[in-house]
Length: 513
Image 1 (tube, rainbow, N blue to C red):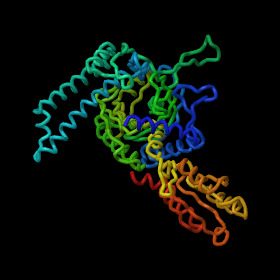
Image 2 (tube, rainbow, N blue to C red; image 1 turned 45 degrees about the vertical axis):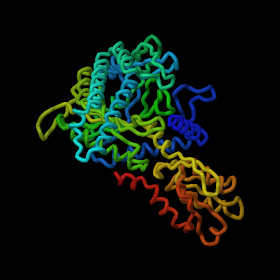
Image 3 (cartoon, rainbow, N blue to C red; image 1 turned 135 degrees about the vertical axis):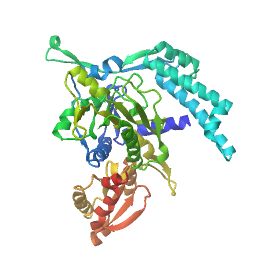
Image 4 (cartoon, helix red, strand yellow; image 1 turned 45 degrees about the horizontal axis):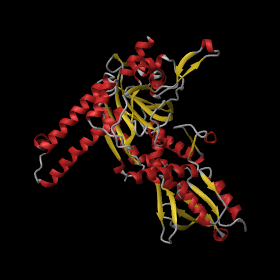
């Protein structure tokens, strides 16, 4: 299974480069580790994902607006947010494989395996007994009780080590849980060390006057420092949200698995400001809403699951991930967090400016609580590629590689293909292309035989191909080919728009949520 997953990821990486989705950054200079460039098809897909998220947030909700905050922020911002003092990852190396890992992630994965054992025991018992009482079973079955004891103890030790930044305790936990390196299979670990993830630079016209600033490690703080600006100018009433799409930068030591974890990445975040005491209601609301948004893409409901955080960040009172079944297994795709009033209260303290909301209904001022939804755009991109990619053997014995990208997100919606480069077919094809290009992202190609062109369009995920032949000149009909079924149908030129629009409509996708 592991080899299949590795091969799938390798095939996706190779396909992405060959067909203009993703290139290694600065490749002519041998590249830059964990940094990638999006090619002509990749940038189109990426923009379509952004549009899907942006319209869902700002158009489908009348109490959410969007901003675009600067990447550079006053350095005190990051002191107030806790990033200067606490934005660290505990790192550990395996001496045999020479690979570096997040120590807390290694422990969390080991704890998850204990939970899997408990779930399997419960599942087996439920099948054996007709009147199965789960609550009684987990407290009386000796094996499950032992598993639960290990689970609770490991969680408590992990939480204590993280809160107190006790790296020795983290190392001892790895030893006691007998965690092995997934590559070498050994337990030969180095000491655990803290590593700050922020990139720093200097701002100033001359070196002597330069001030140390940071590339933002998250986009959320740009929303928080603009809370009152947006609230007052937009006359927003609680509850309301502020959305943003933007670049963030983290000096990840463990940066691997293609675009899953990069040093320069893009986030789609929304901070939802609520009345204190109502945050858990909205936390559950956004958990459900965001899951529906993901599942509307049709990549398979079984490929998504919730993962509740057992060890919360210092600012949160509840947190969970929406995990996706990537080629590497289930990993975080989006985080939903109840951040309490930590951020606004901290910025109020460090700036000396009041960041409070006046509630006219209750006739009182208060600092709102915040529920955050944060999805990695690059991870969304990878999730779509990984479930869209397919290698198929056809009935005629040939093979094809196809990207079954959700049609509304596909880089190109339709390809215009004249059967030949003569007899007036290119001119007719160009006329159809020029008519459709105002409504859809179109691709025109007249090189190679029609079969090869179909294969290229399958490989970049184009939902429809329109073939113009000699019959087109006679009766103004064309052949329209469906990417997924490969079925071909003769239709009138005048009906092309309506046929395509019905399938690739972003509005239809949003209505599913």
